[in-house]
Amino acid sequence: MIYETAEDWRNAPHRRVVLFGMSGLGKTHISNMLRDSGSWFHYSIDYRIGTRYMGEYIADNAKAHAMQVPFLRNLLMTDSIFIGSNITFNNLTPLSTYLGKPGDPDKGGLPFDEYRKRQAQHEAAEIEALLDTEHFAQRATSLYGYANFVCDSGGSICEVVDPWNENDPVLNALTDTALLVWIKGGEEHAQELIRRFDRAPKPMYYQGKFLENAWAAYREETGEAEDEVDPDAFVRYTYARALAHRQPRYAQMAKRGVTVTADEVSRLADEEGFVALIAKALEAR
Image (cartoon, rainbow, N blue to C red; front, side, top):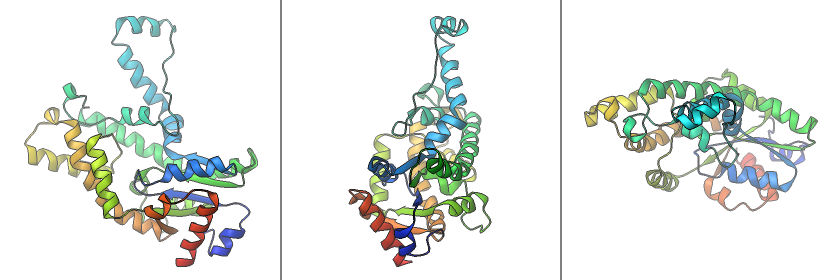
């Protein structure tokens, strides 16, 4: 680790962290809080994915839908209008909409092969965005003059690395650059996230083998053909299983860094509190 002790962390001229854990437990909240303090550069993995690595896919998908409307098709063919995504750190809807959900096309579902293709695109994009972390950490200081750096990773980070491989190139690149910080949620947090997801199921990335198994198991249980699957029903079925699948992967990753709890994070109000929390976590190792 780049900070072996709490003293190393407190005295570091440049503090750098990678926040990881389940989506919805406070990664972006902390990142926004630190950025607003004025001395932290906020690097969002999902934003990087949606702009640098998947921006063209997202825009082309929107254009493909627009081309089905004669009025819009004519404007596009004559370069009279521009179509692009307005993705932001706090609005990643263009990315999730592109990922989509598999199943019945009459309910907005994608053919499973197309869905898998988009999942594979996201996997490749996430790996590249994670490998860009060092570049942005250096750029934050050399170009913009920020002393500190926070990487706000996606919930699927544990799916695109091998936490048990000491030579995993992505994890090694991250730990050479910053301190890994796991925001750990308890069972009550998981249940609340599941309830929240059930109310508004959203597209997300799943590790390839896990997705194949979940798709096969769901169709075997329901007896539905690929184009009969209710997209929302499938992702609801898969979400809780995905959370359980990710927990041991997060825990293994955390052995390379420190762990804080979601409850501790929820009580943070400022940069000083965050610095103290990480120091406490380092002392507890």
